[in-house]
Amino acid sequence: MIPLGSNPSVRELEPDNQLARLASELFEQQPGSSLSAWVKLKTDNPRIGSFFQFGGPGFLDGAVAATQPGSELIFTRVFQGADVLRGQPAETILNLVNLLSEVQDVELSWIDQHGAVRVTASHSISASGFLRTSLAELFGDEEMRGGYLRASAPGGILAGFVEIRSGSTSVGIPGRSPEGSYLLYSAQLASTEGLFTSLKLINLGSSEASAILTAIGESGQPLSAPVVVQVPSGATIEKDARDLFSETDIGGTLVGSLIIQVDSRFVLGDVPFGESERLRFAASLPLQSEPFDDGVFNQVANLSNFFTGLAIFNLQSVETSVRIEVFSANGTRVGATEFTLGAGQRISRLVSEFVPASAGQAGGYVRLWAEQPVIAQLLFAQTDKSGIVLFSAVPPTALR
Image 1 (cartoon, rainbow, N blue to C red):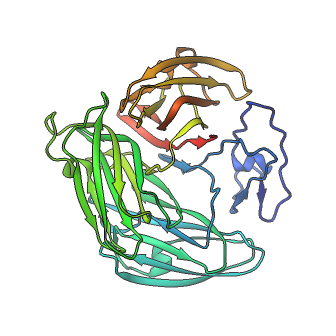
Image 2 (tube, rainbow, N blue to C red):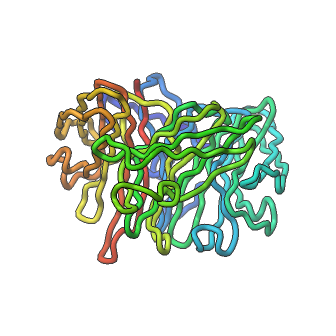
């Protein structure tokens, strides 16, 4: 890991081991000092899982480290204003890295939900430098309700993510390539009393895109008839799952997985989810387009006031065997479980329920193998007497 303005921090990592440190610990900062930098991870082993987190008192989220930077990035959610996010005030902070050893001129554009470019700004980022700024600082007092942010640097190489902050809640949205997939998935679909799941689709193609949305229950059966939506070129569709699938077999409650078939490979999307009334906690994950049969989740927090959950969706038309192993930070295998997941089925449990020996564990990681490729995600949360106070989603690092 190499921060700007500092010597590299070189660490040897034994097979199956985990390195989890604060940036100030890795780069030997004095207690209480500030560290404003970006981090580069360089390794001689491509089979390494990575995950970073940011936060402060009362808020936390993170993302997998960027592995596919590009000259154009799309940030699927942006909010700026007094009541723009589920009736709550919100601000968006942009973090953008120049990966070239020369200055990059970057054009930043906010595109509204109809596909219209509402406001633009230009910024030069120094060689191997980075930009961290709020959208209010970039664009002024422009109110932003939805839409998306585009960062473009022709001939350049960018990486980045945005932080969306609302009260005590913070959500991280990584920058994405404009190219999506014909099939998109989410192992997270929960619209129940007090909980929401929101779906967003962005059509970055030059013509209208058609998307077929299918909600699959935990048993593998559809929860409702498929829903077809049309997304104009450059525009977005953003709705709560409860509104998209208003007619279900179980009285308006949705718990399961989501499959999206699109007729364009330039459609991206994400699925934020959390507490619906006051947005006391929330997290977000990109819609997944690459099922995997070998993956790592780089977080375990099974303490008395923390819980870690894992959801696995078998999108195949045949059953698959699944094996879950939990490891400590030093590579010791804590325990394992094996089971069969039927065609189309989803299973969601606490990690300590999958592997009881991991109860009370802090640190370490989860390794998941499947006979057939699956979609999966992990989340962890901190609780107190009032309920959940911190909430963070962890995408997988696919190893195969």
